[in-house]
Image (cartoon, rainbow, N blue to C red; front, side, top):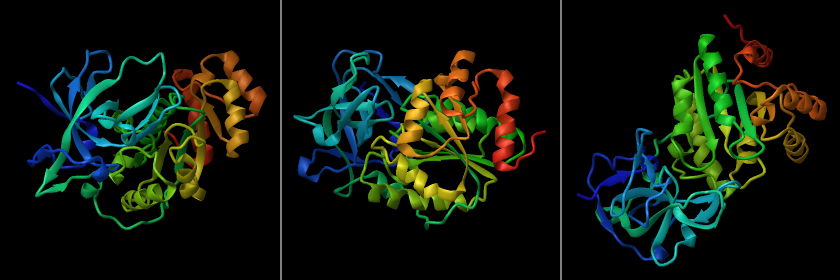
Length: 338
């Protein structure tokens, strides 16, 4: 029997409990955020997996149906594509969460992407279903909690790993911590790892109805401000915010950082190498309080980061660095650790 798998971009919806029909629509009626269904085609490879609404990863086979959402991706290390690039019904799952479009530029080191054939949109009562239909209503409200910001020199720069350690330390200090990913391409695993580390609640841009944040800035801000209002109403002690990719990439990282503004009390730059630290600092103009990520993998790298930028650097995967991390957080947030 053919399986049907709901990607984690459907986790804000009721598609897992309420019925819907699958109907083909002409491309002129397509839009970002539409819930669509594709049949798995091609020869299965390492990327023939779907991240489900629980965060679990499952293998899919030719003929299986995948429910995801149309969106855009501009990943510097992996691939670039959009739902607008779909031709002849051939599509790709651009992330395992079900971010559906068609790659037009793909890294040669990436395995073949999960290929899908467009079967139709998810409809009810003749109306297509969109991510925006399932967003919890909320009025915008400014955060009044201090923010620990994680931003990077690129994707895969260690932001989520650093955030997990920071959330763990703050939660162990008795603080009510909320973990947030404000920009990037839809995946559930990043914010789930914050919850596993001790966050009382986690949110991301998917909760705001965005499959990715490669959208016009006004669309991004309109979606994200009510989400920040939901977070503010929970009255957390501290919010740990990850901005996916880097602020200079088209994921609206710069807009997210500007929106957080003066509430950013601790800026953590995660860098792929020591020289990238100075590149992002000079290009973006935000001086970090500490550097983490692959650029801090060895004592030589840590020394080079400090020599190039004058900023302290920590390898948070080394337990010996935790006292220094607590010192940075205590100084930025006025927190006492037990």
